[in-house]
Length: 187
Image 1 (cartoon, rainbow, N blue to C red):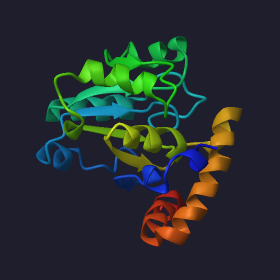
Image 2 (image 1 turned 135 degrees about the vertical axis):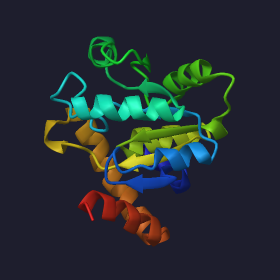
Image 3 (image 1 turned 120 degrees about the horizontal axis):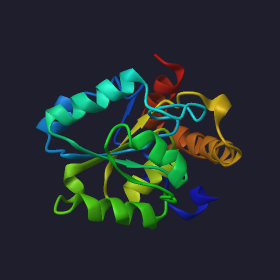
């Protein structure tokens, strides 16, 4: 439904990667990024895992050592988000209602005084993460979802809408579609 309201360009990610480990965070920092808005579910961990894995913990620590401030932004409930973030000591926005404004406004207020040009968002969904970030002028990196089988019903619904967007992207922006398809195929 959102694909009927927003222009197709709002669903185009700034970049695409196989996973959060494949992103060159040093390059992002060199290019002026200072804040990362990071999705949790199916971006950092699958829905059926509650706590950060040792690999994710090490990645987030390394990102912070580069100089980034990390704000986790999730559509999930407080209990789920808090269980993940407390062991990490990271700031977060729960019940963000991505792609709508509530969560992004909260995250941008937390990120102040940094402007949107210094912020990058990372997530696994075109319908929430990419659209939401683009609506606020934030560069968005799309990663392949970790485990689609464990997704909630509403995320599965978003994936159906995402397929419609991908078909439209294939027609109008074949190079963008190809980039997304390569990531989702794991090549």
